[in-house]
Length: 124
Image 1 (cartoon, rainbow, N blue to C red):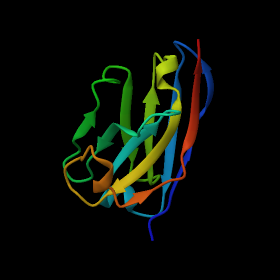
Image 2: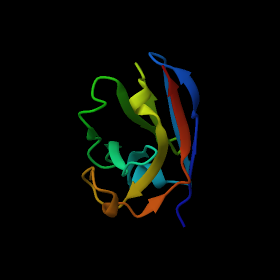
Image 3: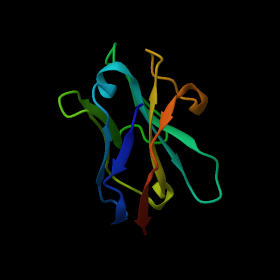
């Protein structure tokens, strides 16, 4: 059973930064492609970023490119999402997910396991 637990969300002013963490069960990060998605109030969920376990390929959505960085620490079984230059449009619940596909997918149905989410609120 793969367990994913997000943390690091909170309230931040526009222009600020947050780092989200996704703690996983043992060896998940080194054997699954890991992704981050978000869902803003009243909107559909959207892909944010993903990192492959086999190719170390990273894929970041255009909406956050240059501001968000995904990384992983295999020794800590943790995936991170560093978010800089935050704007109110980044306000959402952020979800960590794990996929068995070797190349980072950007669609939610390609992910097998999901965390409960962490709230990020950016004030103007």
